Image 1: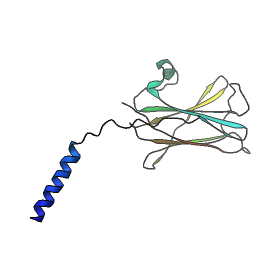
Image 2 (image 1 turned 30 degrees about the vertical axis):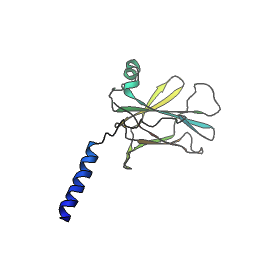
Image 3 (image 1 turned 60 degrees about the vertical axis):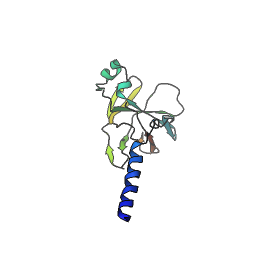
Image 4 (image 1 turned 120 degrees about the vertical axis):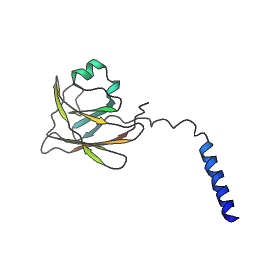
Length: 158
């Protein structure tokens, strides 16, 4: 009798859990990162943008394949006091993508020489509503400080 009662109770719990409407999923976290960090007299500017959000002409000019689950990491280094478009060359530059499970993957950065200085680009595969952390370390000269940036983004791909 006790076994039948336990089975009935578990069945009711299971049916109740299956029939409830989960409602709307929570919205993706709002992105409010400033997009730069400063160390000494150098600023490191960064952005992570879905390639599908780029105008096709711009994506094509950088040989970027536009896919719904692909983001473009853009990094530039500039003088902190400068208000112009001058960019600095990185002596050392490393970027990694860190998954929700803590797995690290080094990103293959590509230097693009533009008017005003270099821009560094890498593509990052992202998943729907799964947070991805980007970690960047840079140095512009041997005696200068190391500049680090670490932030987390989440994309709604639907």
